[in-house]
Structure formats: C-alpha cells, structure tokens
Image (cartoon, rainbow, N blue to C red; front, side, top):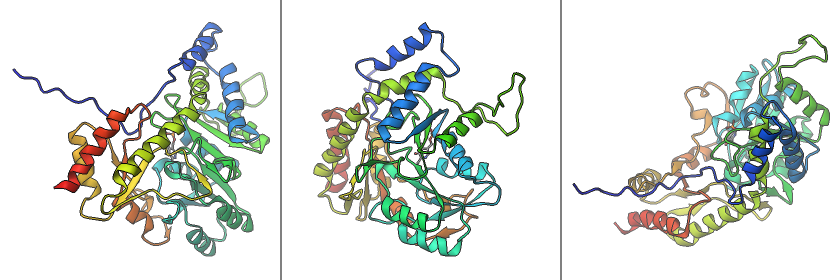
Amino acid sequence: MQSTKVKERIYLSSPHMSEEGYEMQYIKEAFDTNWIAPLGENVNEFEKELAELVGSKAAAALSSGTAAIHLALKAAGVGEGDIVFCPTLTFSATVNPVIYQNATPVFIDSDYETWNISPNALEEAFEKYPQVKAVIVVHLYGLSADMDKIMEICKKHNVAVIEDAAESLGTYYKGKHTGSIGDYGIFSFNGNKIITTSGGGMLVSNNEGKIAKARFWATQSRDQTRHYQHSELGFNYRMSNVVAGIGRGQLKVLEDRVVKKRYIVDFYKRELGGLEGVEFMPSNEWDEPNYWLSCMTLTGNVRPIDIMEVLEGENIESRPVWKPMHLQPYFEKYDFVGSDVSENLFENGICLPSDTKMTEEDLWRVIKTIKRLWLE
Ligand SMILES: *Cc1c(COP(=O)(O)O)cnc(C)c1O
C-alpha cells in the first residue's frame, strides 16, 4: 500500500520555548527549593521583570489574562449595573469578566486606521451613556489603539481605562509600552500568545495599592488574622511558581520573537501585497507593533474562506478575524455604538500563520498555496 505522507502542520501561533533552555533553569530552581506552589521567587521576579519591561510601577501575576481583566474591573470599582465600554472587535475574554461583575457592556466599533476602538464612536458612546464606569481598550493582533485620543476623551469624562494588552506584549505606542498607558493593563501568557507560560496573566498599574489589593483578592481575600477570616469575596487567581519560571525564561526571548513576527509579516507583504483585492493590516507612524498575527483583508473575488480551505488542505492553520461581540448570540442583547467597520473587517479579514518557529521554506509553502487562488 502506498502511503501518502502528511505534510507537517504549520500553526497560527504555537508555544516557542527558548533554544537556550532558560525556562527549564527557572523551573529547576523552583523544584530544587521546593517552591512548586504557591508563589515563591519566580512569581516575585516575574512580576518585577514584567513591570520594568512595560514601565509600570507594579504587577500581579495571575492564572490568566481573563482573571487579570476581572480584577482590573474590580479595582476600577465596576460592580452590579455599571456600564463598561468594550471594543466589539475582540476575543470574548475581553468582555466575559464584565458579565462576571454583573455589569453591562456597551460595544464600540473599530476604525480602519487602527482596527481598534474608534475615538469617534467612543465620543458618541459617552454622549449616550455619560454614567459609564470604565472603558476597556484592546490592542488587537498587536496593533496599538490610538491611545492619546482615547486617553483624552476618557480623562475628560474622568473614567478609568483598562488596556487589554493580551495580544500586544512587545508593542509600543509612541515609545510607551501598550498596557502601561491607561489606569490598568493586562497581559496574557496563554499558549498561542507571543510568549507563553502554558497559561497565565498579569495585571499592571502605577497604583501600587490597587495591585496589592488584586493580589489579596487573587488569594481568596484572606484577612491578616491567624484564623481564616474573610471580609471580602475572594478568588483563586494566583500564578504558580513553576508557571512563573516559564514566564521569566520566555521574557528573555520576547525581543527575538518580535523580530521574527516582523520578518513574517514583511515576507507576506512582499509576496502577497500586490495581489488583487489584498490589503494588509494598517500601520501608523506612532505604532511599533509586535505583529502577533499577520492579518489581511480581501475585497476581490478570492474570499477569506477560499484561503482558509486551500491552506487547511495543505495542513496549514489560519483563521478569520474575530467575530464582533455585538453579533454574538450571547452578547447581541447589549447596545452597540458605531457603523459597519468591525463587521466588514470580520467578513473580509483573515489571520495568516504567524508561528515564530516557521522557516523560510514554511513561509514559501504558505505563500505558494495562497497564490494558487489567483492563478485559477
Ligand atoms: C487571549 C486574550 C485574552 C485572554 O487571555 P487568557 O490568558 O487566555 O485568559 C483576553 N483578551 C484578548 C484580546 C486575548 O486575545
């Protein structure tokens, strides 16, 4: 029987540990000192290292980016019945914690210049809901939102800004690291992010008191008593010392990963940018993206689904741009402010494989497969 060799899978974005083995060194230290869990040196150091990298005064290492958003909302005083503005074009994890807090999301459209929250739509939302309690801004696919404009609007209304920088570790806006500009910033170390701890998150802020409070909530809100006393609702959201060790090792290669992601997007732009109907994700002179995922939109005869299908046929992973939250069955009952920008980006957008382990040969495999569609 003749065997057909299945080509090795190319991933959208998969975990990439350092060639030097930094992660194992930190994990070994945790084992050697028996600081497996909870907390320990790796957690403390990972917090310090990340805070320093992004330029925030303090950081709390948590079990996920979602947990970090949840505690940011709590720290910002968001509770039952409060309104929170959220971008509609994002992953659901941005919004779910708003519901955990029994608050009400109002979805805001994107603009084509940034793919992120539109300052104009944001202004409009403030007119409609002047009582809003907090604004969540996302830096989608590692592209930064237009923070100066957004901060100006939010300061005028005296509303807390939470930056969901889950996808933008390594992205700078006018020289400032994304996540360090608003009142709170959150990062994710989930398996497909630019660096990973297998799973985990970080909350950062210049308000050290709030970060201390977040650590308290994240460890079941235990009062300072010998007996177990609780005056507040608690959560089990802390990062373990083993996981933090992976994070410390991964931080050392973050810059290398950003360089590779940029190489990947430049490769695609050069080879695919001239095809009819193809447009790449926007670039702005004030933005230094990490290019977590290379994305493009298609407005000609070739549709995103065509590309996804030919790629899957070659065992190559790709996916659509996020489906807007205001179009999701679970969230469609909430209000939406804006027009059809995010809907168009969803309908025309595609995320190409952006795995940092890809070789030049792998990139050619992707490009040749896609180009077939323009030859037919
Ligand atoms: C991944 C992601 C999150 C959630 O992070 P987890 O660590 O998976 O909980 C939140 N927001 C955005 C935009 C994300 O991409």
